[in-house]
Image (cartoon, rainbow, N blue to C red; front, side):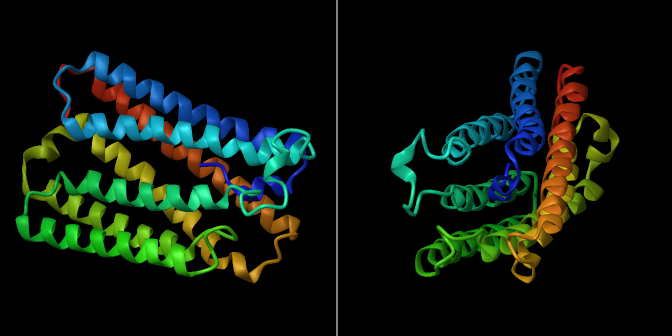
Length: 246
């Protein structure tokens, strides 16, 4: 996902960092459609994952309103100026909650142990309810990225991925790792959240006008997005070469 911090840059720099992110997201979504066409034996959660990728592309398109307004000096979309919707922080806070919840659900579908699935479902429900309350009753919804949602979502995803990896060790899926699409997804997601979440945690320690911190943010956001979505594309490509993937 692109970030509100990109608006701290000049327009040329914004284009340089934002366009590659948008492009790789779109390519991953297109690769997902290609996968569905090539692999008739895909499972339902894979289809949900590809829908989620297109949902991400749609969110980016909607969220671009803030960039269009800002860089045109509000000649376009002037009605958002000086309102709580002037920045798209509210949209990305909602997306962060949906994203963390979806990835937790995605990896949870590959867990066979009923006890662990119940624990994961319970934690997911607590996370969703508490995150909604945090966004409603705190002042972060329109003002800044919710650290509670980002940090809580990261821990929940890491827990779900850890359970997924333990599941791999207990069955014969280890023999088909190369054709295991969720493995590519897990690597991309883990690296992305490992890179991006600390930015949210430590952002309070830096002034928003600190250009060095802004450049660190945009570089990490750029490369972590490229890495994650490239891994998705790689997974779709490799797994689509077989008649069946897992």
